[in-house]
Length: 471
Ligand SMILES: [Zn+2]
Image (cartoon, rainbow, N blue to C red; front, side):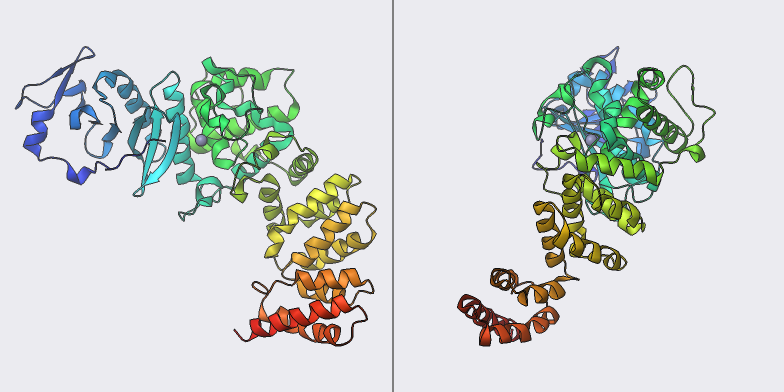
């Protein structure tokens, strides 16, 4: 990623007269420096432009239509490409008149990126084959933020479709059986690649042949889809209509097509004809059952792209189980979670417990009554040892159930469990209420437990608890 030490701001532009002196003429794609005092010059008839800072900044268009291109290199030899980018950005800006893209950084080493800089969309693009596709992908992120993302400026507001549940559901649906391969940038046009998911981690950013990561989140799926819809509509249609394409992939393709056509591109499409003109956005529905199928798929597949990409990421937003469980809980779709906790495959049961452990740190009010008895039963009776352990851990790390289960363990006939329970009390994090509930039990253990190690650790814990309460 290229960063510049000093941002060129519009307010710091030179005076009008000084600017006039720096105007350049573009004639028949040849650039000539204009003598100072010359009339304003044009990229082409009707499109004014100016260059500053030895060509490292070029502004194309005027007033509210102006777009700033900037770089660490002289951009004047690249006016032809900049002109094409200008036209494309102007076209796509019509989809986001309330917050258009006005800044473009031409990078020498960053294939493509979208960010927000001083509340402006900034897209970063490298001038290499496919740069218009990359421009469209990055513009897709800006369009997503305006039409689908959150209103705040949190990281999640750029990646989750807060304004549009349907798109979020389309994204979830795309993870099933890795159907998102239908919408990966580098599977289209000149850069077709068979290497879809084995380029794990950061490598995927380094290889231009493998661009697009629609599995990552709702905005990535959107940006990739918008690029393909805009530039490779015929190719996309061919795959969707191919009898060999799976029913789910077709469903995903049609949902994306109709969504983009009706909700984003104002009815416009970029193919010779529209085979889905009879389908309207109202007909597009991703059902709970379909999402439940996807969740089961994710839980079962250790090696799916989606899961593989969870590991190199630090944000939990990259973790699809979490993506799924939260909304499932919030939408009160507890049935699927209960079903999966009862799945015959121990791996599914274990991963499901693991998945709910995270959001349960701060459990939604409604969830406790349903899941607690079930997890408790699993902690005791599940035939699989790993599942029993996971269930136990989930119950005892959960804020809501923690005190109750710690007390239960402090009173367990097995001295190892009593001792382990003592070691699990978190003096830094447990709140006073939890601490007060544990106190009488620790007093009793410290005074009279038959096991001397338990007595010793209980006394020690009691000391720490008293100090914690006195803080
Ligand atoms: Zn992207």
